Length: 154
Image (cartoon, rainbow, N blue to C red; front, side):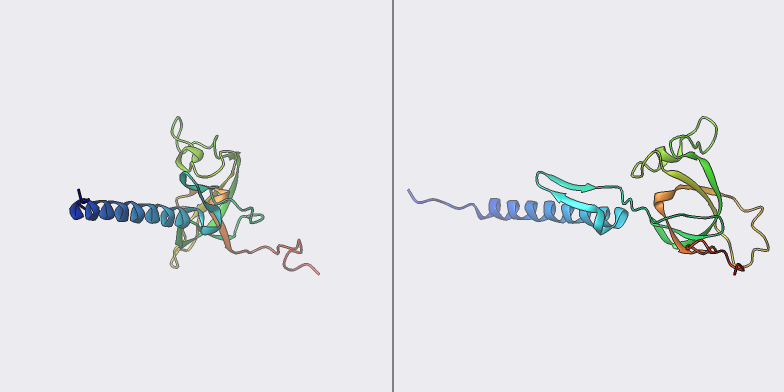
């Protein structure tokens, strides 16, 4: 008896595999967008392994202009380097911690407080501050000399 091929079944299976492939590609693209392509590794049997995007970029100082790696369009100014780590810094008393809100970063990461200045601001004293884990921020412009020589010293 000759073998009969059910082309509808084959076409449905091909479409299903195509959808699964597209879904996996989206997951990979999202992981790379979040953690950075250098921090995402495909693993056999699992889709991806992301290491949280952690790279120690050196010190962040008060006055530095920084960017949030998850929202690089906004430049912020560092106004405080908190002594609490992300797992101890509560957004409000009894509320979630910075670590709770940023599970992709180490819970023992330092906390950096920033403001979003506007061109028309006359001062930053009354600006609302926002706290981030240090690993989520990248220094765009530093007001301090990274070699240890402060401006004005000879």
